[in-house]
Amino acid sequence: GKGKEKVQVKVSTQFRAQYGRANSSLIQAVIAETEIKETDRFIDIGSGIGQVVMQIACTVGCPALGIEFVNGRHACAMQLQEYYLEFLSKAGALAGDCRLILGDFVDKRHRDSILQSTVVFVNNACGTFGSRCVESGNLTLDYHVASLVKQMKIGTRVVAFDRLLELERPELADVFHCHDFDGGSGATDWTERSNKRIRLFYYLKRADTWICQKCTYGNPLVECDGLTGVETCQMCEGDPAGMRRSYGLRKKTKRRARESPSHESVAGYTNVASKNTKNNDSKLWTCSFCNFSGNTFQVQAKSCLNCSKSKVQPVPESKPIEQRRRKSQRSK
Image 1 (tube, helix red, strand yellow):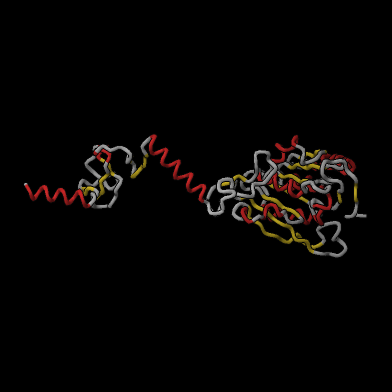
Image 2: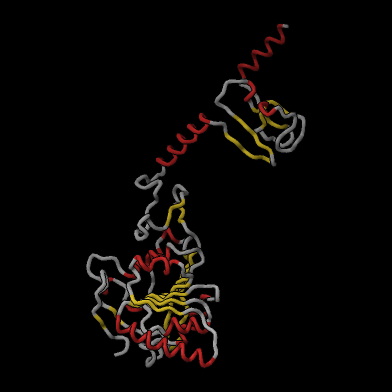
């Protein structure tokens, strides 16, 4: 029956595919929530008979892509697309590019097409992309969807029937904005009779890296393989107190200071200060007006680099040296 069809499919991870159709009223709610425009690129992962893809291409006018793995459903989608194109030609209506692909969205051959999308629709209701539909020990399809979304551009919107928990990890709180919204009553073929309202989950990508709370290092969202998520900080992993990074930074800073002087731009000027040399020319002086202590005699400037005032106040020297000078002046 509707919403309960189970088809055995030959795919590397998925062995059960349950069909459920989203009605046009639900898609209109998705369009309103995500604010899809003609400049967006829409994708339906698990597009079934392709009615969602055609509705988006026709009503919004943006390029729309659908990927379906089950042969029977894709055949129905291609037949429906023929009627759809015939209707558009007779009506003289304009619509966005509509593409329907037979294949597995996990396949790397489709990755480039998927990563170009800016709006993602996933009908993963009732755990159809979860652990109950994949062989034991394999990653769920929800995990694969989340991995692809992490690699998409900032501003990408995702709408799913079930939560994508991989996008709700604590370290990704500032990367993805998450909330749910009302999809309406009778919005799917399995809720038409009961008139039950459906809640959909919305995700908005806001950054390409997540910031470690301990060492403030910006970590990528996925590893180089494009699949494994980065869950622990790559800088202070295995070092909860963050001391390894702190020591490494101090060591690196000292090495750079020995190799070359540091440069600091202040009010359009360049201050060159090398504290490692023993020459008197490298000593710094502090401005008596703005208290800027980054001025150096090495630049041979008579005015402050920060406020351009001419009066300066030398940096206080150590007490023993001052006492010696006083004694020498008294003796003279």
